[in-house]
Image (cartoon, rainbow, N blue to C red; front, side, top):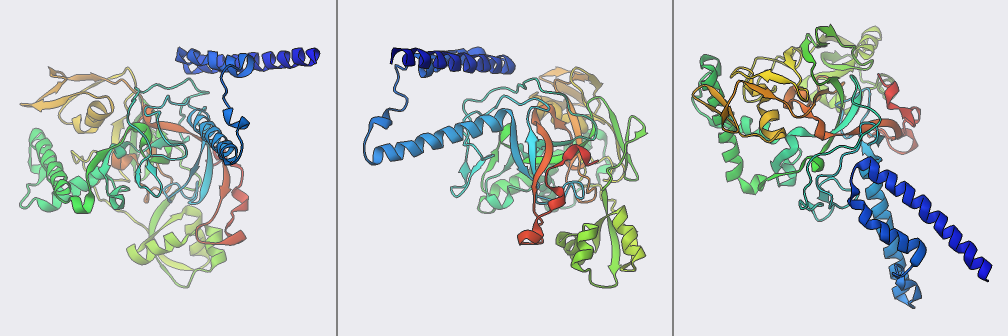
Length: 475
């Protein structure tokens, strides 16, 4: 009996040492030594056993049964929270903005370790929720404590043409009514303001400073309209960075690079960037016959694409699909949709006459690098300076003031990225809401672990060829 006790104690010490080493390595990795306060409790679990962690095992009746389930549930929730926070999480493609590279209904295994996990800004949150509790439709997190942005060292950094999961930058402000939460609050403000302002001047006829005031007034009119119509929109609310919606796009511009789009082609520092193999643009066309299901499946045409053709008169297609429709005689008069709308393009507070197909040039801010600020380029960099980096920014008598100091330069504190969808004419991306700060980066999709076609049901809706396909192989 004594030998058995000694052997058991040796086993417990071995377990304790292994757990302690792993725990200390984890604390070193995350760079937070407050976790040392937990070591006495780990020691008690394996060695001294003074605290009865599972006191309910000595109970009788329903208490033992209920507490066993509570214990298992709490352990599962803590484990899921820990794994999702520092290592990986599941993500589902909700829209067609990356088609036909990633498809609606693809489930992704997203690595947090690839770029380094973030220490949570809002650590007290319900696992498996992003910002809202299902059924109750209330916040799933508590805003206190709120920690500053810090990222643990990862395996690498975001590379050009990586597919990246990130928090939606323009999702910092929104309305509480669930019907409008998916909408871009800022674009709505400008849109409502534009409709409400009668006899508004032509901004091109104004001086630079007058034009800035014009867009400020436009935005303010729209915001006041939303505030007055609470029955429709609810309250205006904000969300912390890590509680904003998760988006997935392709990174087509890195910190310090100059990006320009000319006739749909992206140029980085003057050189054309390779387009994704399955890049899509929208085309005006007329179908000669009904598209059969097998043809739609072969060419990657969805019911959403057909609906776009029926309602808007154009359809997103890859170059391969365009050629096949022509050769098979299924469609005629296939012409590229050359939409030149310039009024909902970033920066919203200073129309530069850029369009989704002809944009820039625009320099992407990099940490530690400075830019000469002028009234002309201020609308481009106002949001990073004011919102993402927390500065007070004002324009007085044609001069720029940051934190009450007149200046003509600004040095950025964060790296920024430019994200676009591969479905180039059907993607709300950086062309519409600007830069993605480094503190918004969530992780890198590694592989597709499940894929189901929303247009088909049962086994016929499972995309078997996409299961466990590595995202890095999708170029």
